Length: 73
Image (tube, rainbow, N blue to C red; front, side, top):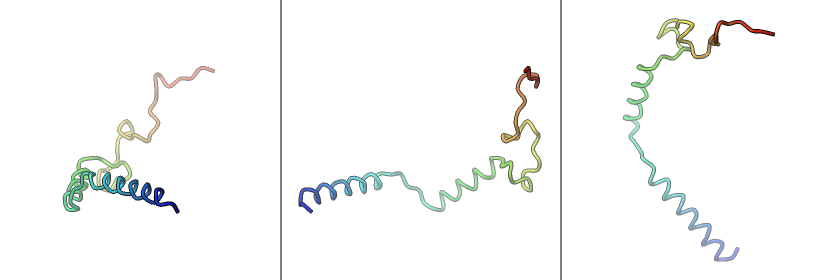
């Protein structure tokens, strides 16, 4: 393998490492606290034991009727 090619690969690798180094990081405890806060403040329609049954108009997975509900063929 030519030296020029090895140098190019090493430079690309260094560039990727620098990009990863520049990413914003937070501690695990802070991430956990944010996740718990999010889960406690946002309803999950699949966890009915915690949030109770949702009304049909609150369920994002239920097909919402559009217009009068009639269709013309």
